Image (tube, rainbow, N blue to C red; front, side, top):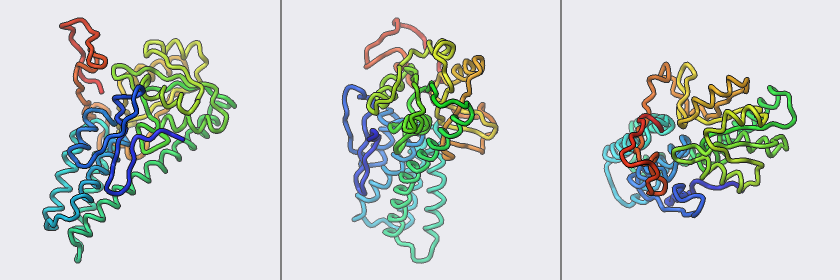
Length: 324
């Protein structure tokens, strides 16, 4: 059984506080858009697909729990659109929330125009839309896993593969199963995964705290490595492929992902190792022509200088901006 980033039933949303992993497993209730925004911004939940899901479901839960209120149709429409705009601002680099917001906004505007639409029927339609997003993500992830595993095995012509991955792209970053980690899961289920190496993923340690946790939980043969060891691992550990996820893929194929992905791609090319990006179509932004147009989120410098609120960097040390 896979770990769950969220637990949802109509009117109730709980998220796994990933800041506490792997030492503590705590699910927290999300009952409003504001709480959903705060959970995304603080990275209690993270991963491009699940950011969109949590955002939309936080809206669905608030709408459900306010069903006894009687706003006008116009006021309800305005509340939904304002909430979506607000949710996008929590983590702007990951495009999934922006795409979901754009699609839901169009859906709401069209529904509101239909003759006979009432506040109650619009509310129900929005909730159903958000719940369908949850189901589709899980379906997409399993498809990515199966197609990715088949392609990799056919491409390399080996019965057993050794994979290197970065950051966290599994059940904790999605509705379930995962993207890049979903391919690794599928390989393992087929008996075709010899070993997986996961990077620690500084500065936020998603690899050490989350990916290693998922792999150990599911008894997948794995080794945690320092980010600075990745090139050496490619040279000496017979790595078959590098598989990563994505926060955004633009029209020319440029990809924004967790900081450190770029140097892995360069090292993989140098060593002649196939490099794969596993992502759902919801992570694609074809309106942008190249990666230079992607807005890169600026995270607090304390995420680099501190660990668990304890400073490890020398006082006065400056940090390089522009990482996510």
